[in-house]
Image (cartoon, rainbow, N blue to C red; front, side):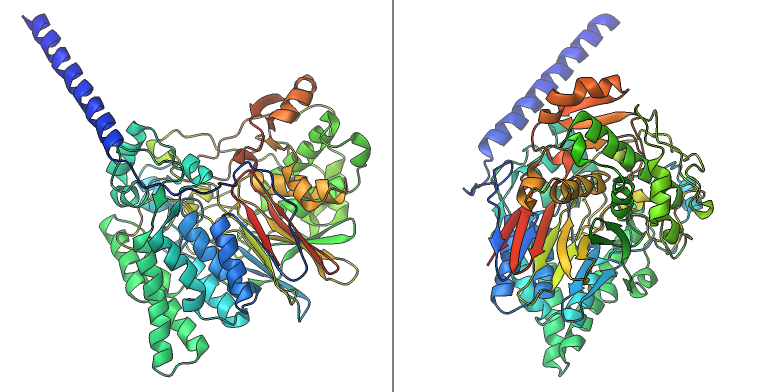
Length: 623
């Protein structure tokens, strides 16, 4: 009798599953979205864009055009950067969200000056390692309120417009508000970033219902489709409220800066701050009203290294940007050109230089307000020469030993590698980051790398994503990126500029999405251009490799010893010989966004030229 009952129950359950599956299929067939026909630039050959007056490169075509339109309307590079940033927040919000992070570099042509702005928020005052351990976390979780930093980009926007811009926030936010309301077609990388199966979509809807409403339009049964019309009405309303706060201040007799301050206060001290705090109260989070009201970024001197006849400038050690000049200085004493471009010996040599520097990144690099980073030594040519001596004929079996820069010794301490912790909280929903670079007719330039993803609870009815950048902290007090109240994690996004050493004039502005691949991609593009003489567009399109022999900057900080990922051309030509050196190699399709999507602008005399990477929708617009 019992056996028959189980059989009946099994048949009933099977029927229910069949009916549910049929219902979901029928709903997805009947509930067809509206589509917008357009030419997606993903993996499409790019023309080498050149111009005489101004140039924009941005992560989506809409962001590039919005920035170009602001320039055409008389704005400068700083105005255009804010317009481009906000349109990226709309059209690539699952990768570069409002109001999260926006690491920034600027070049002021009038002063011939390069500056870095700290465009990453801080950990809330209540964010301690003990608070995480009390909840049973060994790493900072994704898909959890505890992964949210204090937001940074509204502060970046207000500062950039106030100190360098000429337009109002209302003027530069208009394109983003319009596109958010009218809609845009889902592009291929957006579709990839939100490529969830039906079980994942159901789970997303259950765990993060408002996020699901924003990105799946309350239709968890239907996957996001390429070219379907996508709108962001809640985010449009939020940006409109910020613009109205500025307008109201101007109508009350305030000047331009008063209006921008009113916009900023509306976010950090006004109604939007209240909604953020309410979210954290409801979900037992960490961000308080005081965290928001007291937040501020600041200007800093960029970090600087040298390669050939150029100075490489990047953000401070609250990012991983220092890796780029350090790697290039290790390689500057090697005849790379004689090895042949992307030869097996070349790839091995560059990969080992990257891994040596990544070991130092893990040992020394963190928020300079909390960590005494030995910058002078790490960025010295003498130290680079010492580390260069450690390049071997065989693959490193694991991350190499860090150096001892204070004692100027090539070898120092072993890096403490965090074990991988599997968790439901570590599903990726959106990813990647984005990038924009702008040079205006006066020679001013901006390099900016905005980021963050909707893996944690979004602020209901606002379209705002507070992201998961706390996951780039470590719950290990010995690590330079260990969590502490008021501290910034060592984030992967960073901006880069190259100056001519002879007169400190700007030669190149560049950056990329791609997490730990960011520095690796920038190094490869720069070597393609500076060592092998490729124009910047050709340099961005060359096949790439990626070392996985380093701990991921995102929790759970896993890594794969002696492993190289290769785009298919490289895999076909050199994977066997790399295997003989001790590497495990993985094959990826040509122009895969796993290898980042570099944007770059080169200033050569009166000529501007752009590199727009076809691995994503990166687009160049010049005049």
